[in-house]
Amino acid sequence: MLEEIDIQNFALIDKAHVEFEKGFTVLSGETGAGKSILIGSLAFLLGGKGGTELIRTGAHEASVSGTFLLEGNGAQEWLTEHGMEAEDNRILIRRIVRDTNKSSAWIGSTPVTRADLASFASFLVDIHGQHDQQSLMKVSEHRRFLDSYAGITGEVKNFTELYATLVEKRRTLDSLNTNEAERANRIEMLSFAVSEIADAKLKAGEDDELEAEEAKLSSFEKLYSDIEEINSVLDSSSESSGSVLSLLRRLKNLVPHAAELDKELSDLDDRLQSVFYEVDDIAKEFRSYASSLVFDPERLAFVQERLDLMYRLKKKYASNTKAPLQEVLDYAQNAQTELEALTGSSADKSALEKEISLLEKQVYSAAKSLSEKRHSASDRMALEAQGILSQLGMKDARFKVSLSSKEGTDITQQCGPYGMDNIEFLISANAGSALAPLAKIASGGELSRVMLALKTILSAEDTVGTLIFDEIDTGIGGEVAVSVGNHMKQLAAEKQILCITHLASIAVYAHNQIKIQKGTTGQSTSTLVFPVTGDDRVKEIARMLSGDSNSDESLEHAAAMLKKFGGM
Image 1 (cartoon, rainbow, N blue to C red):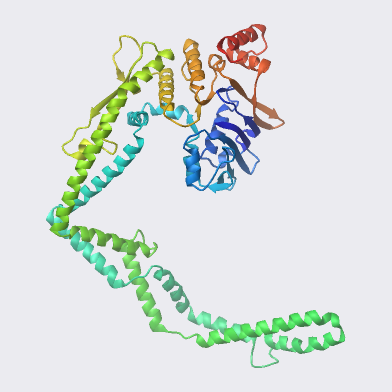
Image 2: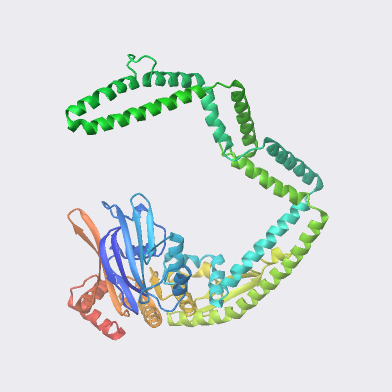
């Protein structure tokens, strides 16, 4: 359960600290006040994407932190597996994004990646927004809802991995069975490539080393001239030449005498002695370097020929001629692997065929098992969803989970990555209407209620303690909104529910209400977040009812609704 959230410099929110209670909490406010910003800050805290656009104008970073009470779900196990622990069964999550586009996240006192943060947060909160509602329009997403309800999501993941193995083995066998002429040409090409690269005896990074050496050898005359001049400046054979060392030698003899006359010069004398010996050592190393400089035209020719060879190999086997030499080596390794597969013995091919035959049986058996579980769950899911839709004002609605088998002539066609079933939700919203695809006939209001029904039946199996609904009231009003509000209040008996709504007929059912309000100070606009109780809540409900929070009629109506529906 979310207990509190602290927001700083996030979008229009300057500073906000909000404490949340159990049960059903409504978030309300004028259009454009920033209600979705609060949900956005929560989504960011829980591992959602976010960049510098989230930082309030004039600030250098945005930060969001939240405290969660862990309620016997998988969150405790996740923390243990990752070497973390909660304190008093509570955990603090914190996330920051800076104007340098770098972000940081912590679970407790442990820094974590965004992926780890999202993984942990999946045990705590489920946010439902317009995007989730639109997923109902995609038939491909219907399978996920059914699998979650049937409790087979993990089995489906394992099946997908098994199916991918079969597809890969089939691809390898198809490659072995390719037309002999094409296969022979491919073997010849791969053999030549492997041989050519092997003959070159390349080493990773060799091109960088040789380019540096080639640059040195090609610039030998200039380098030699520079070193000669450096040696002349540092130290020449004539003591009167004015070289650095000759001047330092004179100072080395003069300064000690001055230091004897004035002890305050002792430190300067010591420093000068140190400088002299350091420069003397540098001069010796430059002389040694000069003596080692030898122009080797044969080595230069060898290096240039070697670099030319690498250029030609990169042109043939790498992404471009400036690519790392490793790409050529990787090409050779991949070519060798494919070559071994193409030239494998008939015994290898026979073993592969047997392996594929066994995998096909395993895939079909696993797909059959998944299908049976889906069929078993589909009727129960439809009945539960239909019952909830009736409570939500769709009394004549019929809901069905349609399952049909995939068609094909072999196992990979009869099955897909998720099994052998085509799954689609069908609905009849009105008495006498035939069942038809949900994606084709449902209005925005009907989609909202279908999603709420699905979230409700899935939440019974889900250990997530907090459900957040954004824009759940799209396309609904009147008695339907009353039904939705009542349903959410019932759902809040088992879960913490947070809901953004514009409708007073939903808000009056909430146990708690938080108002989001836009304020202006000078040239600055900010979003304020605060709970409303007592008379303040009556005024907010009155505003939601008629846009007028001060008229006696609106206030009386609001107070009556709150009293009737149990919000106060």
